[in-house]
Length: 256
Ligand code: PEP
Image 1 (cartoon, helix red, strand yellow):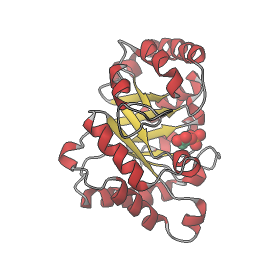
Image 2: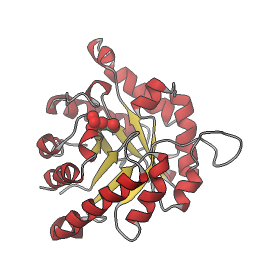
Image 3: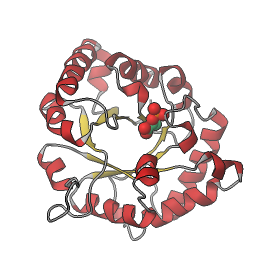
Image 4: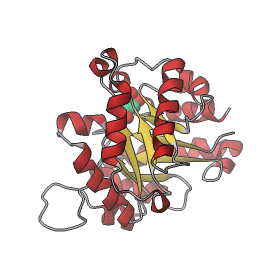
């Protein structure tokens, strides 16, 4: 079995109370699955990205378990006069491990650019957190044959001046924008071709063992097939991570 990362992006969902209820059920079911639980943290990682206001509830719920978490966005400085932003240092203090950077919704609605995201990648690494850097093309870009050009630009600009030797914790999430939240999953051939392209681009920059996750309507019914594809190291999951059982089903499908 591959070394996998199965990550849940909750976006702007779940209050602290709903977060605690989710984890009570999720952990109970997971612990009852002795085989899946014993491999967790060794053979595969599970990570949650709650909204910032539910971060502390997540931290408390997951304390003492091998389940990891992080935030969906940070500012590139850890403190100061930056109203409304999230601090990587606080994530670390709460026991978080990952920072999601450059999700397509951040790029689209909050106008984040490759160069602003590059600062966040550097900052996450400086704070000894693991950046999960998202890349992906829109439907229009794919239809115009621009997928590789777009991905290459996102990779080279977003990872500019990042030293691969000091970025062992970096994770890439390839998420075709047209497959996010649409129920329209990329075909296995599209995933195979694009992950191979991303892997080659990363290796050329010196990132020889950076995991590449797939995201975009991943769920239990397609995870088993997609995880077999070379250079797919796991999933970043939105909709199918909101209920404990559907995310656990996806984990189970990826493991088997
Ligand atoms: C996401 O938000 O990163 C995502 C992949 O969402 P969904 O699984 O709902 O497509």
